[in-house]
Image (cartoon, rainbow, N blue to C red):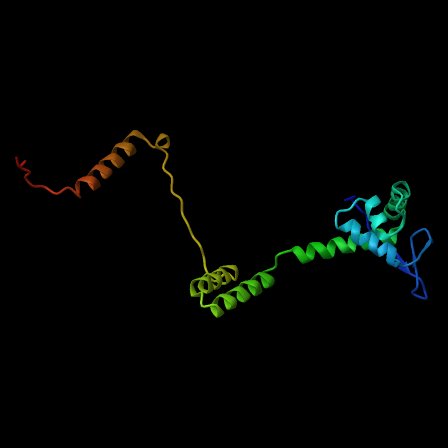
Length: 175
């Protein structure tokens, strides 16, 4: 989709049109222009959007019409930008929507007797709401950063730890 720039338009005194910064008057969108915008925002090319909007079936004429709508009509461009913003807001994940969806899933699982799934959904709601803190520590010891004395001390500690678990006794082999 082409990068579009918003144009500041001021409504006329009667509110039936818009005036741009050069004083040119622009009419509100008609149904074909709105359809063009809706098709274009779906990912169609300007040419295909113009054909689907009903401007013409001729590709050359549709290409021209699509170009005019995108490049020379600020009302169309502004509407496309508004549609794009609305679509991105609709797709955005918000905490409220997320918690609501998890609540609905929990209730559905509970109604179907799937207690484990209901508990899992509730735990995820709690995590999303900040009720749980998942804390992990990863410790790494790099031998090349240790001194010779530190290495020897650590080895002695490990050997002592291993020998603490040794059971002493006699072993006899039976024939």
